[in-house]
Image (tube, rainbow, N blue to C red; front, side, top):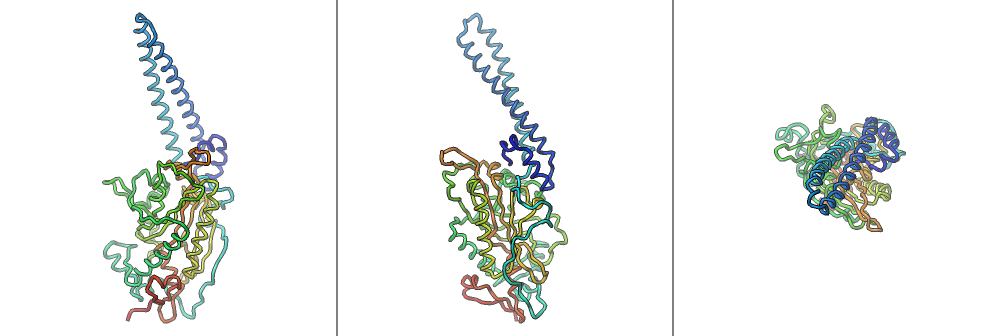
Amino acid sequence: MIDLNLLRENPEAIRASQRARGANVDLVDQAVELESQRRQSLNDFEKLRAEQNAHGKLVAAAPKEQKAELVAQAQELAAKVKAADVAAAAAQDELDQILLKIENVVIPDVPQGGEENFVVIKEVGTKPQFAFAPKEHSDLGEQLDIIDLARGAKISGSRFYFLKGLGARLELALMQLALDQATEAGFTALITPTLVRPEVMQGTGFLGEHSAEVYYLPADELFLTGTSEVALAGYHSDEILDDLSTPVRYAGWSTCYRREAGSHGKDTKGILRVHQFNKLEMFSYCRPEDAEQEHAKLLAWQEQMLQKCELPYRVIDVAAGDLGSSAARKYDIEAWVPSQQTYRELTSTSNCTTFQARRLNTRYRDESGKPKTAATLNGTLATTRWMVAILENHQQADGSVLIPQALRPYLGGIDRITPKA
């Protein structure tokens, strides 16, 4: 949720952000008008309540013959106070409904435009050169007997799969490597719930334009999370953190679920775009003034993991229209996928500034002890999708796949996966 002080003092900054995103600018004007109405309604309520309190003292001190008239006046005042209270609450509710539709204010130098208007920050690593036609990860997975797509579809439908044998172990090795790195960097490990209440899902911004991607269990009023970011953002909701001079960092390991609505016909083969996968998510709470520095650190940790997996990649600055409602800035890291001869997103990191924390009422105490709204950031450190790039970039002419050096200790020293007999 946007800052009301910014709305009052500089609504043009919010309008500019909405324009950069390609979002509805009229919402800002509605919010300005409703905020004015809310303040007037609250002022009317407080004046009437003060008048009611003063009148109550008159009633208490009045002689007996005047009490009946004063009590009648008090009852009239009480009705007016109640009506003013209802009007103020209604004005607040109407304002909140509009504020929930306004997306986070983008950082000024974020590229404008849509999905195709990203800016490449850098490219790292050498793309593999094969003396043979590189295979797709799905074909490799079948020939190596580590991914079973057919039985996944038989059991659960399209976009489901089994990881088998060294495929299952490779994913766990990837997650454990990421968790060890996060632990060394000072993150506290959490295995998070994957079912959350509506207010938590709403608070993180996932019930806006992307609500069609979310699985909902109406009988329980719970949502299946598409990332542990949701549970991690809600972890300190309605709390005041004592000290954020050093960011509070969590690494959340969870299974994730996405409906992939609107992606019919896209990446239907293999495990690039699926309904269920595992992920290790970094999440930081920090002071707003430290958020951009923390964002750079999350990106550096992600790059460190890509380099451990010996993958060529590029880092892009995502354009405003492709950020998602909660992010003020987002960096994607895309790994090279040889079979497609292009880069594909493996991971992203978002600076959500105070947007999520304001919705979830997460605060911290500054040096004077005054509560202030925290900033939140997130970034994926490993996920099932990484196996696509690992398999394709490390494939060999004989059909085997070399295991990156950093992952071998987690696989008992195994250095390659070979095709089944």
